[in-house]
Image (cartoon, rainbow, N blue to C red; front, side, top):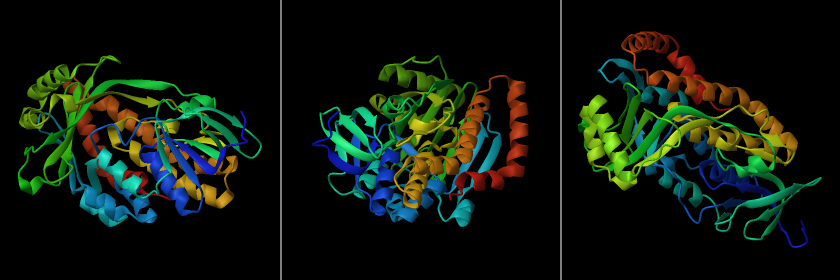
Length: 389
């Protein structure tokens, strides 16, 4: 690959999602030149809603724009976890959590979050409609050929391109997905009023037999909801079939909340199989490294997928500042992040295994154990999850 007419940048990031944009912001604030390439043709963060917990909110605060995220979303003051029969398993006072970490959880549309992040970057940094086609590592840089024919000479390359990362593949870093046994629907219920106004800032997750429902407001008018269910992999339904299936599950286990579906257009229901990534032996190869789902995709059961990518971005930017743009920085970042990431991925997987239990006795035992464990170790787990370096 010739680099005679290559564009020179300090950092090339593949992936214009939440993690890639957060990293671009963080490293630009430290004075590095950055190019972000994104395969799709424009802003199109997939998904419906997202909850930004206190850990990513602390990162946004250190980067100087947490208030913009708060203004774009909806504060969640309380999260109630319950069995579909009405038994309360846990009530989390997120306002109390905010007194520990400075922020409550903010719920917002994923595309709005992406727009806020994009607004922090100057024009020309984010390039749509192209991706890395090939790369060659040299002694002091990486020569990159993009799909549009452009040549880039980057000191380091970062893959922020998701669970099926092309950068991970090109760097021969492995990666095997692990299907959880569950698929999911996600959507926005526009103008829904499932709760009275006194509960406007409450979020709920309800565990049924072989399924689970969660929801919260994301603005003054709309609710974000998700529904997970036992399923064989790659069993994709049409929009009408998704609506009918969701309706059947809600009527069977969550009849109080059918309004959410009644206020959702069938074409807005997104179906996604729930998987994670088996543990990689390393997140980098010399001058090429990974963040977020590309390095350690997790199931969504703790609501920490996007949060982990944002924490990764902050950690990696700091590592670059400490030891320079090198393989050593990737190693330092991984050392700092590994323990928390591995714990989060494992904990999230285990929650997924227990929330869909169908046997009545098994569910009763689970509920009893869970209430006891959560009451005794809640604050310790919260500190582990939400503390950032």
